[in-house]
Length: 311
Image (cartoon, rainbow, N blue to C red):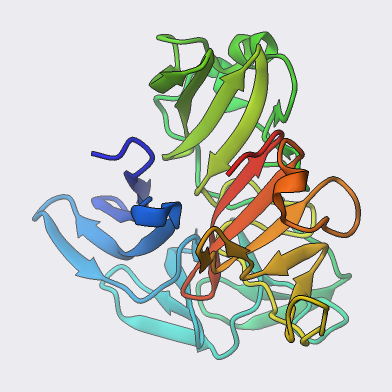
């Protein structure tokens, strides 16, 4: 089995006797083109051990007011305990849930809408704000105390949680665990150690090289930027920009889309260097920071951040 491929599953509590199960299947086939497929979420009855598929996207599932609120391409759908549809929101906008309230981010372009999560009834508007930095699912109970405080933070594009590119490996091991004590080794090569931590129902992959963090890769929606960007988000393709090497180049926050790496286009967003704009993705810029955002079905599926990248 390819050590860079993984099948990940997570389970999150809903009503008593019911859990939501989902996951992602990631593969690194020939030519090293990473591909991720989302596993459709299922509500599992733990008394009868029967599963019911619900339509939804990776990471777009909230639970509040006794309702399972699932996001899909056409909007949000709220289900009751018998999985009957109680109400729908026809437009998929960023949303968060807290207690019995559902917050829809900037739906009217000026204010956040607050809804009763149980009935879908509109309550009021509040000033535009990102209500919480990440999804409201609790961390797995098996997580150690030192990792329970792992912040749901993604700092573009060098920090994930409390792990920063190029920081000493000893600091990460002190915070998250060392080899055999939380860090699972997948491979060792040329003095580097490649492995992962189990965090938030997923695996966060790291490479320790020369005593420092060389790269970070993850598929969990737990980590978000302050604006809410992370796994499960959409990136607008935007207009074409004609350059000397391509008739149509798409750009987003310094990233370039669908660049040709090796023989084939990567179908991902790539940024080279730490500047506001990406350097050209050529061999001359190897051993510099490279950042990759991989997509699946139009949504972010995986982020890979490398401090000294070599293809």
